[in-house]
Length: 305
Image 1 (cartoon, rainbow, N blue to C red):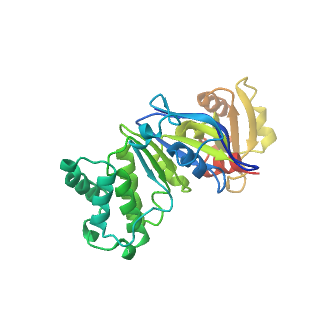
Image 2 (cartoon, rainbow, N blue to C red; image 1 turned 60 degrees about the vertical axis):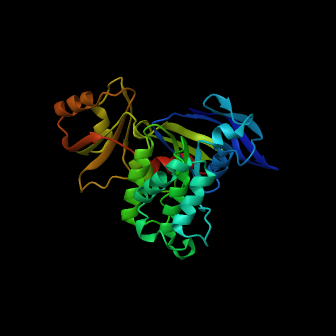
Image 3 (spheres, rainbow, N blue to C red; image 1 turned 90 degrees about the vertical axis):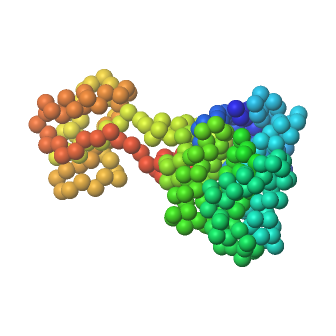
């Protein structure tokens, strides 16, 4: 388990990370989100030991990494956004080099290299100089080098950057497969990627955590959307239930003429009671569904201003 406690990092007068705490457990993919300058990259550099914290502690498998960084770094696979590569090397030379410096046993190196070639689909470019590769292929080579020693803690910063749609789908599948018994943190600007890949999400804004939740719970809220032929005042008259918190017009909805979209917020999850109330009314209802906010709108609300 990776545990971050009251972690801060100051750069002179600027507070890049402001007393954040979170836990990442094996078997789940945790998405790290935030606008540019929010503190995501600094957080990842602190976790990897690249930067020293101003305050706070980071525990990996119960050990404070500041006491012995090698405990973490031996089991770390970190892919920064700008992938560090040696442009003059051939692809197969780079993979051999990475296997050696990451301590892959000599008798296992060829097997592990071939595994990375297959996973990252590099077989057609093994004899190409890295400098001649497209951005997408460079990213795949860097990912292969990151995973070649079978790390237990994996931190990926924009791993699908520069890939075409087919490659993105493949790499996302690889990432999902990696998480079965590993600690995996994925930083990305692609919100759909979080939806498709991540189990949990941490959203950072101005150095502070503004959300730390499972993706499913982040979407949830006791709300029901109803599209009905009524004005707001008349619609509200039918609902005097104690569990109703608020009824408002859905500003994002675009119903046809004569209909309105209503958002009903509940204190507890009882959508069936709303259905019963509407069934007894004389209101014409065209649609009713559990309301789920988009991740885009949630992100915007949490990081605005």
